Image 1 (cartoon, rainbow, N blue to C red):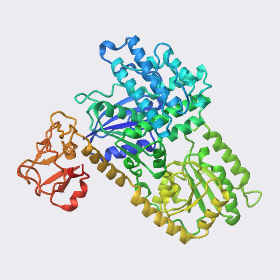
Image 2: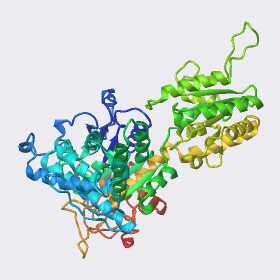
Image 3: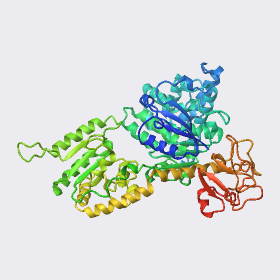
Length: 640
């Protein structure tokens, strides 16, 4: 099948774990064709050297979420390009933009409608008083505005000119100064309104791109499934493909995008009204994404709770742990030497990691274990506060642990060292974990703790703070203490340093758990089944194969899922002969339009089955083998 992979700030150009996960997924699912639609977050991402992609990545489209809108991405017909919007287009924009702004910039318990723009009043109307009905009202208003703007962009060729117009600023001003405005946005000044409209243009830029086409031209209109690797802007093309073409949308979030927006806005030098309006918009976009997704796959329970709080239906949530490559850590010994007293911290140095508490905890550890050492391994990330925070940690370490020297002529050494991967002492990441007896995590804010999983692959005992998905990841294979409690952190580390046997038991259990739950293989196998499951539940959208029941509803099995997978198929009328399906065509047995379940135990005369084989993803599956039915995640028709 054709998969539209939607990314933001990651694959195929940016480095980091997001890129690595997408690359492993694409290279692992060789039975599908991928089309990558990438939104770049900054100019540095596009300037990076392009990596070679596998052959089954048929198409790569890129668009920037920064700078001016690229003229080559407009979606209007040739005769409309370059023409300024007329009065009719401006009035339609005022109505739909008014719906969008009213939905996220107002509270439901006010009185009176929000005022519209001078050249076109935004639709008004007070929301109902019931809380549940008010939430539904806001969601419907947001959807009306969002998809109305998308339809206008398809006809007009883009929205940047309209979003940067004076009319957009006046609509936003009328809503913010209206009786139902968000309390934090009521004091918005002109510069605040201009900043919000500028950022809304960037966030809504996917509406104006030429990525969509139809079922017969390249674009998202021709894919069988849209897979958004995060929420936010990356999911917007998938929402439009579902709206215009009925394409199923799968959303995967290993770090909840809305949470990342909240943290980024809190650290950015923005005014309170700008921060409140942008946060409200991102929250409304997340709710619409979760409402329209056919399936949502959070990476852990912590992300799952965020999604449920934002309105995601629990029945459409399925946890799929991120796959990590365990190969680099396979050569690490099961346990450190019994006499090792080294603590290791690995990660990105930033305030959320709370290294200050770790240093104070290590001061307590040194009282019980005078020979203990602490290795802080990692560099600074994108947080602008990180370099200053690292310098502060170095100064604190020098104050808490003056250089120790045996005599006046010997150079002393500090028991705390700050290092980076790639130095002569630490050529690889596995060497960092191998050098420690205990791996420590001291964060106050954490999503999915990748460093803990890496330590578990290395068979190391861990001491962690109870934040994010820490408890879910380690299970019972490590010690957990409350965050911001240096004494509790010190007591747990001291206990493990003094007990080598306990460290070995915990490390062995940690390695077994990590190899069972967090490997690349389990991640790829999970998404292989999810892809086939979603496409099997989606009605066929081709006119030749479309069948409907007595009520006019498309049958979900009008075209079985396996017909989307390229390969060799059992020919009609025989169980042993195999033929190759021509490109772009469907085997006759798959296009029969009967709605027959692929799990049927027996085949009627003239149909494939009855002991034949079907090759799915390069593996032969016997239809008469009950055990092989586990490879077909498709419900029977009688369940629909």
